[in-house]
Image (tube, rainbow, N blue to C red):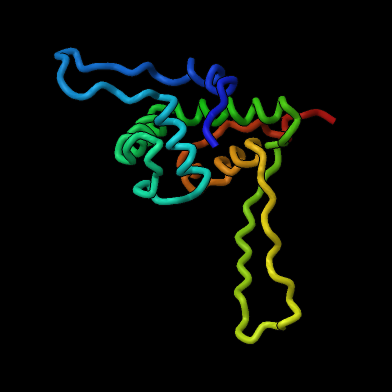
Length: 153
């Protein structure tokens, strides 16, 4: 799921404008919205960069821009802004989170009475975008979080 027009209007000011080299050489920069959609797709799915679908810019471009944005703080600002928007919409509370690394392997000869997995229902764009915050790539970007310890009771 790509960014909606409303989401893009909120994030556009946070992203650097496409630029050209002063000498005019080289290719022009790809549209930041397309690149951000590609980056968010990889973060949401956890797929390798080279599996990026053709509707996005080349994976090399998206990966290079991801690295640049992670280094200069742009990605942290974008993700922090998205998190605030989700919290304001009342859909998600990011003050407490955890990662569950539980693994349960299937045993050979499992009970035949075990029910097969149910078909997954379609997910909203909210839940799809929240998957970005669960991405392993996010561990490279720090999102500032308010501390509860500073609150008075």
